[in-house]
Length: 78
Image (cartoon, rainbow, N blue to C red; front, side):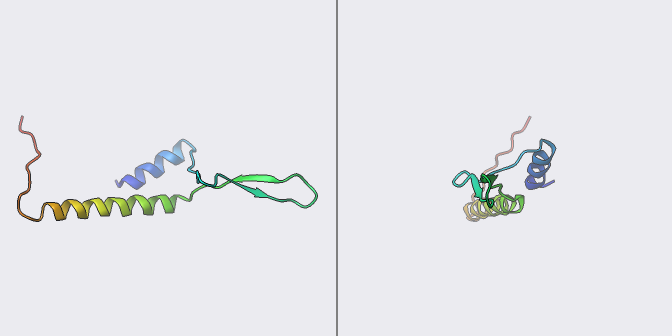
């Protein structure tokens, strides 16, 4: 299971949402009435794309840092 699937499942199970902190609400003007405000929720597809992009970036950094043949063995023997 991918990390993005885990995050999506948790958000849906808990009925959580992610909003844009820089512009958290949008004012909706109604003719002749008090305005309504709408939360600027971030669509999961954008969060997913950002996570996958960051993971790919880190994987490439790891591969390039280990491509000189001096890979460290980080496993521990019991």
